[in-house]
Length: 509
Image (cartoon, rainbow, N blue to C red):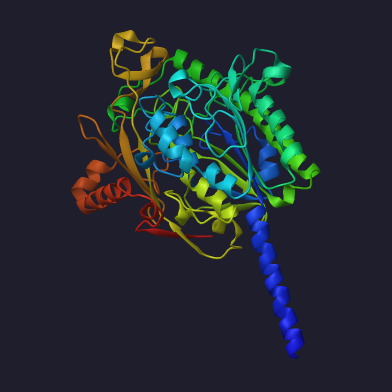
């Protein structure tokens, strides 16, 4: 080949490479985050549009997990890219470091939006931020976390009506008018306004819906949907947890009719509330298409934790170590991602921030984040990618110093008590777990309680975590317990790159 043509071909190849890099750096990013949406007990069933508009044209991660199954620690881990033992957010209370002065001073300046804004992104937040956000002890509505160019955050926990927002640091009051105030729809409408103004430059949007968190208030047009639906009765539903930690052993089994009616009602209302989230996804996708930005935008759909309705006779909540609480939906569409792809690699909520930075051309090693970018898992066209095979789940229980007002007879130390005085949390519902996804899948957990209780499950043969095999393994293969304990200690002390490069790796598509 003549030298002229060789040089021209080389120039064309370099141009394509540069264009690809520029495109990767300037791609837009949207994160739609549901609140308390499970994957294990059918939580994605109402989201038909979401599955069609994101999952069918993108990748669905079948092993997506949170590193702590509760709103504030999970959201803090998403924002910081860190495990709770590094960002120190333990639970939903201010004392648990939720939106505390410490969080605002140390972690918020290092959160992923700060890096994106510095890289030239317009950043928009709308919805629930952290449970204590906007309260007087957390700095009030005037506090705007760094990194956000447009800010619309809910004061306190999930609501659908009668709430206060911080709109760029100014309080905005809302009442109970559906057209003006229904929060899921308001988030959708404000996101459309942002896109119309800011879509000419790279943007990041985080849309954090209240649904399907309690009080499970559906939009008027959906209040009669799923009226005959009941919570699924399979798996661990209404099963006694005799070999589990004391909080599970304390649950009444079989559940009373009142508890079952209560959880069935919650299950139906959760699905009804999710229908408006499905509408939100459709509105955002359609607007991106109208603005000719859809092909250059990564759209992520996820939840801050899972949920249970009757599993191990616990009526409703999260906060437990089991898959129904720690496993979440995760769907992604975007440039270079093929449609109708499933990926089994274990992806964590602490990986979201590093993935956003990777899309923006920012190296996660320049940060203090514990997570890793899973962008290569989405765009590698089937090539083998080295990836983790185990990870950490940790939680610190909330127990009131006084008796729970719902069940005062139980005395102090318990919280989140529901009908029949079944309590979902306690001060010593405090645990750390290693979850492995290799040839044999194990779930190993140690409790910080008076029993130093240990739970171990072989997920390959027992995916519903029905049988705690700790005592059996103690007799037959004690070396396994030692190995899991050592791995747990290593993960509990990991920081940054040592969390991203665990000793056991997973080769996934």
